[in-house]
Length: 320
Ligand code: UTP
Image (cartoon, rainbow, N blue to C red; front, side, top):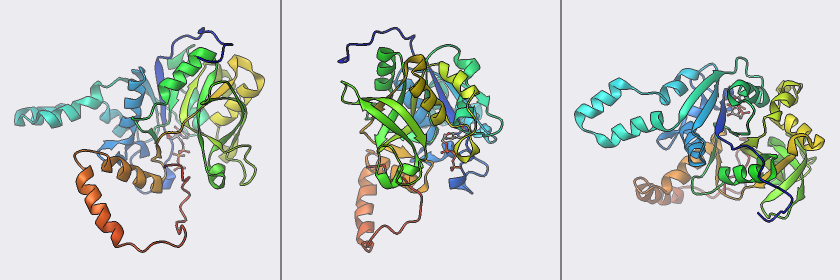
């Protein structure tokens, strides 16, 4: 640690909270009867990558905040005896291991959000389970490439500074209005900034910086009291960004810091980013990559070069 002002006073971070109760309206009709977090990314649902990321950072106690279509999520992290028996009988160990992996990954708990009143409201539902400890929040539709470190760095920063910590990423100013955006001060650590203010989805051209909040947080439990008193904000939803803005400005509970992430991130809640995520992750795989790359080369040849982006999708252009 290069900043000398901090001591390791924080209790350990052991629990991960994964909000997965949003309506996923950008993905309708696919999300009519299934949460968007269950959409497959190559051959695993998005949420399994997120749970694997939590476990890789040492967080094996996972609480999912679920919504109206919770059954698919619960089933995915449970045993499926009939399927296991069939695969066992066939002697297909490889597929059996795949089926059993998600049910043995972590201790997964579930709580219903009730009305989807916003991300802040979803996080508040974790209060009873989390108790009085710092905890991580991982958005269930936001994937961080397993080859790039983020969550363990955020946990280290939380422990060193005793603060709440959010993940930030540099965005194109033209897409800043799609995110929570931070006002920051430098620290002695190259990848850490102190946050002095946050604004959710600023009007185009009014963003205080090009540092946007992405879906990873390591929060002190004081956030719960703040959330309980946070009025609905943008979109008439209780915004986690608004509660963090309060914590950042009041310096209550150690303030808020940002870890600037420069790795690969995939927003699977956005249709165009979702397609890009599948192509990027599949081309890197040993089993699918060679054939997919060969096909992509031929396919690209059949395309006409676009003059300018023609898409009207509201995609945030963050994925490298
Ligand atoms: P989003 O804003 O991306 O989710 O929330 P959404 O509302 O489902 O998406 P669209 O815009 O309608 O397509 C980010 C994360 O917060 C969760 C979502 O499930 C997602 O993981 N969330 C959001 C909740 O758990 N509860 C809410 O009330 C809102």
